[in-house]
Image (cartoon, rainbow, N blue to C red; front, side):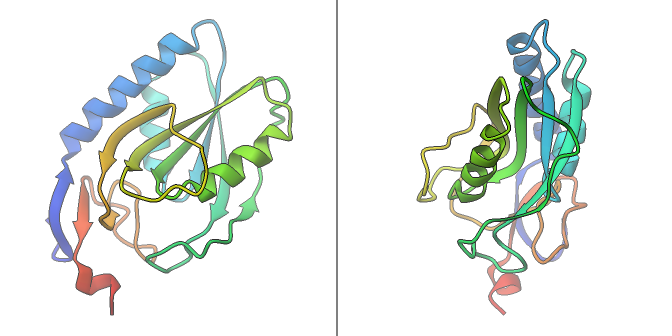
Length: 180
């Protein structure tokens, strides 16, 4: 375990099993279709790649960058889309893949933005759903791996100030690290 991690919430094996489960659900739900996975960078990159390998369908992948945190521990409240899709999503079934659903501010903004591009459908897949967070939107995950409480989590793509993404597990970051 990394010295800055207070405790491990989800092990590498638990994550693998949950991603496999979500892959099976998406495979069943999109049978006969070619969904487009839209990973929200940077946090979802590992989850998106692993999920893509677990979906037993032809599917496409693209990425967006939408930020509301910067290097802070709490959301700024201002969502900015820094990188748009390269793919035309008109008439496509889109699955937004996110690392964590916290207040839902970022996902609400991204979903609203994508809906303007006339997709056939837009669903949300998240690695973590912070169930104790006060949601500012009615956006909810259609697929999720785990529920988490109100803790600052890192690993498996999730970061604090652009570090800890490469941890193979998801852990709780020690408070003294982000309250400096």
